[in-house]
Image (cartoon, rainbow, N blue to C red; front, side):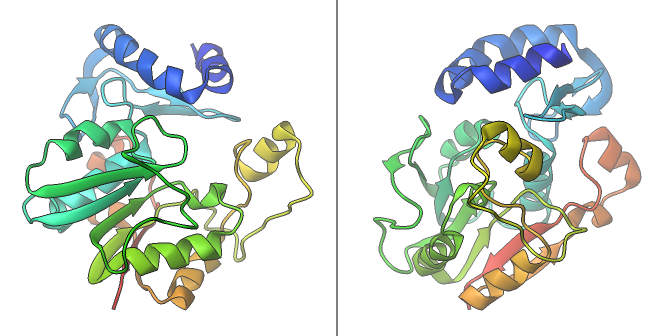
Length: 255
């Protein structure tokens, strides 16, 4: 199973993978029925979650029902328990929308929900994050999760995110984390996909962010809360929801 998932992730184009997942999910869920682990996004429980990873695979992290990973479930719990996202009228801009959220956010009648990306089949607006076709101060909420590590000029992208966010608005800008690394590492001379996967964690990543990521966001103008939300949850909840202990949510505000 582990080798099969690794082969699928590394060989099937993402648009086709998304379409195939709608067929496969119900079948896989039947075989993994149980009560050990729960996906808080849809409330369904399973005997185990699936492995996931482009290089070294992580065990028990991919929900069979929503295809959520640790970061998606953590974000969902934070939004549900700590914000008014599910009740207050807002204009939302969602970059590279995740399958776990896309249809659920789209159905929320109080949201004016826009998705954007250059390549995603789920994007309403095909746009370059470094040159967005949106007005200044247009959105109350921005989700841009696991995107910036793909962008060569992430400073320009951050400035665009800041520009289109309304004053007082919230942007959640998750990235793959290495909290043991003080400074971000990038090297444009590394072009081999396998070498990039080994060094950066994925073949199409261009850097590994360190703790200085939060300071870079602050330098752009954001007020940044480094939220370790797993600390507010019980150990049982962290285990049952298959979360990554210590993962930081970069919750950013425009003053």
